[in-house]
Image 1: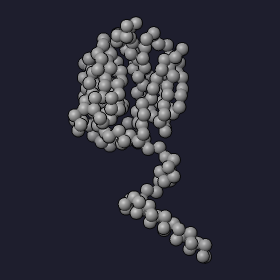
Image 2: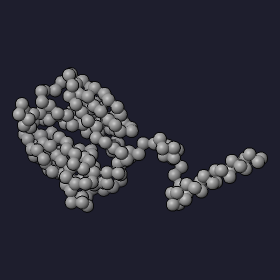
Image 3: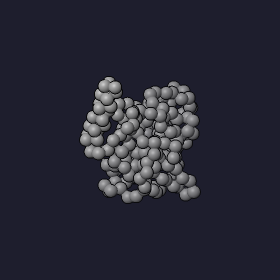
Image 4: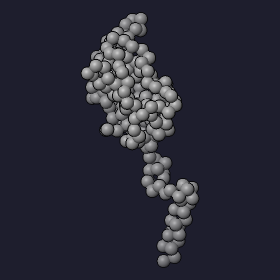
Length: 200
């Protein structure tokens, strides 16, 4: 009986301390309490709108049938909607200063949701490097993201953008760690993976 009372007192004291440290908010998620959880959200509830910091998504490099976009602001751009005539595309996330390729001719930027980078819970862009016979994907994220495919930008020997090709979702890895997926790429290609936070 004494042992049970003592254990109950310890639990009460620990919960009281959590309330004090959290200023009245008790988080009972075991992963977060133990520091082992992944903070990258699977869903964002913010709505699109103008960037509060005055930033924007600009076409940094136009080309025939493809373009390079750039986030000029200090906030993260989430679910960037793009159109080119009847064609549409979406870039899942662009961090401040980050660039991404799209396979659209003269893309027009539509709705964008702007977030503080901290709201992404440590999300980092997945990188893609062409290697012999395929592409090596590297992700330092704490969980698997959702592949939305990607863009292959084609350049000539002088580095000029001359076109692009779309990669299907199955050809892009957004899993943690490193993985090589087979794909035939022309010389001077660069790969831009589209890795979304969740399945939305």
